[in-house]
Image 1 (spheres, rainbow, N blue to C red):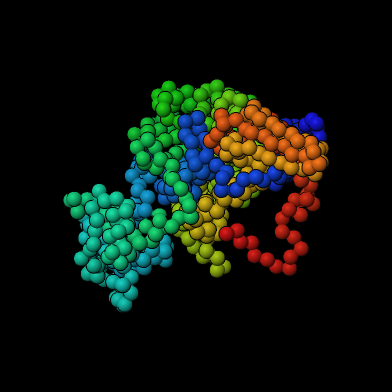
Image 2: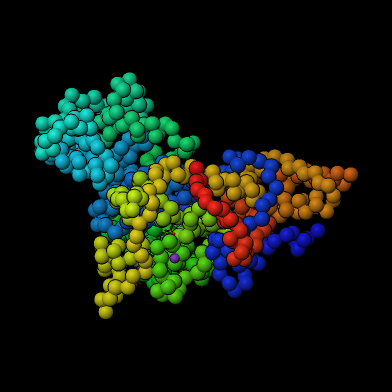
Length: 560
Ligand SMILES: NC(=O)C1=CN([C@@H]2O[C@H](COP(=O)(O)OP(=O)(O)OC[C@H]3O[C@@H](n4cnc5c(N)ncnc54)[C@H](O)[C@@H]3O)[C@@H](O)[C@H]2O)C=CC1
Ligand SMILES: O=c1[nH]c(=O)c2[nH+]cn([C@@H]3O[C@H](COP(=O)(O)O)[C@@H](O)[C@H]3O)c2[nH]1
Ligand SMILES: [K+]
């Protein structure tokens, strides 16, 4: 029995044909299931020194990741990367907000000064959806707390030009800022109030606990532990550029405690980026620096040589990207991930598959093809946590989503990056548009991850298989040998017991070495990939069509 008798093809065969493929072009063969989906462990590295429980990160785009998204991503075990289409001080402030966040509290509630009017709240409600505000002397968080205005204070008031000072409730139940989440939850429950401002000893407003935020924290669908640093603060990353000013920017972000930076470029293999990586690694040895974007082994190799702790892979695959159309460079994303991962794996550097993710199947494919982490833009755009206000168009609730290389994003702040120094011409490499409201990422991600676990279960990438004996009974010896071969390929170096009974119903038992114990499903998946045990094929146009919904008069696609 040899490899040729296994059905399908290895990654090396599929991606070595002179054609580049994307996620929808490839499909994996299922394996044999002998463990439950929830046993699949997806913890994985984003860079050499940072491991996340959920292998998902949000893209540094100005319609995707600011502090609110970064907090939510870290809350569910992933991580957010703050965009840098804002001043250094604003970005540093965003890092600070994430680092100071306590799960279950709202770190930046809506606050107004007492001189504002009820109509200001009406305007905020139509824009942001919130209908209560806290009133402080400065109109900001950190000011002295004076009162609260909720719907009950203003619903029946016809004169909307009255000041908040004249309608606010001043007799407030508050909690001091040293209180734990549990204490705040107890107080809210006992008081039956909806809002509990957190104040310092000097009466200044620190944050807010609400019935809804506590309920969310308590009832999240098995979110598990958040991503935290050594001090227990949420992890946060940030994007920066490769201009001289960006060195000053990184210095400020490091001061605020940023955990990793991404050098944000469509073509990371440049002298500018190599110089920046060397500078950052020499100046901040404990800061993880992620280079990119790259799509070839040669590009990856140069950035790894310069000292990159991780790499971001993808060029033109993003939903809002027009780089392949405008510049004629890029690569099909499945091929890019496979090729860069194969090189980076051999050098011990994790890679992030960036862009083109439309569903949980694409996440499975990215991870199974060698990525350790997946970065999404459009998937998380339009969620509650994404920056920007909701608006209605043709009765549909939408939020803006745009490429960082779109004219709209460039004119917001990154002009200097795009103006060709000699000609001062702007050429867009992305589009601006909108996406539908998707609710909260706190709800979306647990479902997405369960889909991914089912994918790894079907593909047979157990995280705990190493701790058990695998048994298989087959109706003939040939089929049994095929099964055995696939197990041996998957676990090539860790078998310590092998029994084959070739009786009427042949049976094989394999006991795997405990040395592998604790290896995640992802590590197992990569082992399968590089030993040829991950079997796959490309899909014809017709088979892709068959793989989607077809021949229905009408249907509703609901994932959870
Ligand atoms: N992943 C993808 O497929 C793509 C992503 N994007 C996104 O758009 C944004 C901008 O990407 P880019 O235009 O590639 O940004 P970039 O900042 O890397 O490059 C802009 C221009 O500035 C030049 N440059 C950079 N550092 C320099 C230095 N120190 N001195 C002189 N010139 C320097 C670059 O060579 C390039 O011509 C990023 O957010 C990126 O993620 C844009 C296109 C494609
Ligand atoms: O060609 C491009 N022009 C742009 O303007 C642009 N903006 C972002 N990106 C990249 O797309 C990724 C997000 O892709 P998705 O929406 O498919 O998740 C992001 O993570 C980026 O890698 C761009 N690419
Ligand atoms: K594209």
